[in-house]
Length: 292
Image (cartoon, rainbow, N blue to C red; front, side, top):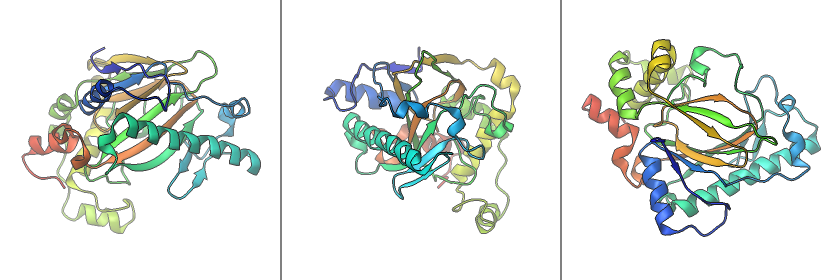
């Protein structure tokens, strides 16, 4: 597969060879999915009882944990059970960060750890608006949380107890997405970003980068002809495997699967191994101006 780089690492704390570190960062920053087919996140026998979609609050999409505040949310469980599940998700947060910094030490000075999530609900068949439908190809951009060009890196691990894979589709390279979708993007209205912040629709002022990325995200999801006809690859991530990808760069869709742990990180453009690969740089070249 042209969009997948497979690396054989079987333990979260094993010593990683230098050539694998270079292989991983070059593939990752070029927009590929870096796949670890034998890297399993093990659950205890007691933790396996949480592999049940009924434990998710219907008002929440997933169960989330924020290691910065130690806040845990989204689970319908008794207090003692919630504490055990929280400990499991926190363990993934700590393990995935340690692994990432072992694999790509270059990120250590600028890496920011965001939320961790546990996703026991099946993706396929879940009802949502087109903008929130993650079974449609898209690049990540958040309406209420501007990133101002910071990268969105996610690490996933399939903890399904059976043989059910997480099924993704990966679309065309980011530059091709931009060439097709950016011409459809409108310019922001005068005072729009300030008004959105004043009304608390956004948590901070939306940069030009965030404006155009959100326009591209929405245009991709809205265009069903594009969704059906654009070149895309299917990827199956089996139970007991893990993968990482820059979801602001890789055009992706999560088609089916359940029981996955996910950790999100943010990295500023200047913290990258090769900053020129960042979506911010691609969009600035396209629009021929600074966007942050």
